[in-house]
Amino acid sequence: MNTVYKGEGSMNTVFKGEGSMNTVFKGEGSVNTINTVCKGEGSINTVCKGEGSMNTINTVCKGEGSINTINTVCKGEGSMNTVCKGEGSINTVCKGEGSINTVCKGEGSINTVCKGEGSINTVCKGEGSINTVCKGEGSMNTVFKGEG
Image (tube, rainbow, N blue to C red; front, side, top):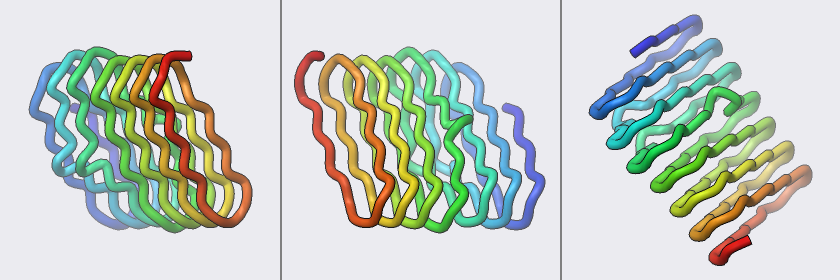
């Protein structure tokens, strides 16, 4: 476990499985990875470089692969909750106010970018990938339940 803390706030990290966890916090606020559990092979990397909070409390990895929230950058106010229960990777970027909730329960990858106010809820339950971009106010709900 490699943990770096370079800002104001608090960081709580718990690792209960095989693999590695690297957590870096370089801004004001708090990073709560208290209940971040990895029960499979791979690694969880989390980076927060802005004000606000990143909640990976319920970030659970139960399969092979990695959850790369290294490029998960929060540069605005709000919260982020990410869950991965299958193979593949999730890359999430939030640059505005609001919240992102992303769930991946199958193979493939999800790339989600939010650059405006509002919220994005993305669910992937099949093979393939989802690319979702929100650049305005409001909300976006995307569901993918098939192959492709």
